[in-house]
Image (tube, rainbow over all chains, first blue to last red; front, side, top):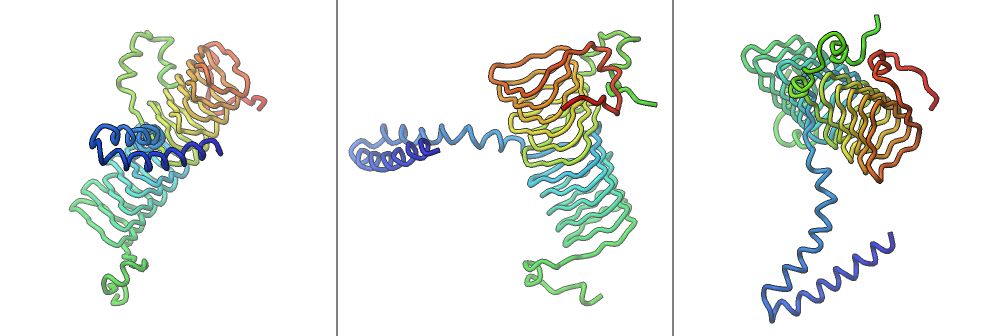
Length: 169
Length: 144
């Protein structure tokens, strides 16, 4: 650890110190060479983590249990359990038994349980059995819903943004 | 009635094995991203790529565990390719361990390839192909 810290600090200090004086007399050649080095070290570390951001659950996959992601999930298969992600896409042949939570949920398949999301889109092939808790909902013609659609403006951001329709009802 | 874990392979003895390449093309593949954590059972007749975190049993035709991926639990598959961390047992006909693999547990295999640099903590018992075809949902009890 200490070795890495040691080499990093002098190199950046040295780079900052050395680049500025030569840049003024010789404009192009030394500056790009100095800049490239830290990039080359930095690149291999974030790239493996960043490449596989979206998860795909294919139609042949059945999951019994919880799914949790800080990125997007596309589900074409079967999930028996809760799903939580930023954006959840549920394909036309997908089946979910459980609660689906996310910033955005797009449903074209079947959910038996509950949806809790800021933005909910039920497409024409959607089949929803259970409650939908949302801030913004789109229901296409043909979608099947057996349950309540409840708006939830409980978050602080939306309170200030507009009046509560819940209070009127 | 216990179902064979390899549903596709069950057809192989009475039919001809020549159809294998066709199936490989058709294999539906699932990908679990690095940000995804799954707690539970994953069951697929296709391919499964894991770059995230899985705690639980995995049944697949082919499993690829990426170098950032980690699995805690038993894996049953025809082909297993491990580049990440695995804590549990592996039951697979063909096992490949990358140089980044870090496995603790037993690896039941018929053929195995291990790259230089792979870390293995545990035994690697060989089994005939019939052993894997006879596996069902209830895995045999083994030590550790």
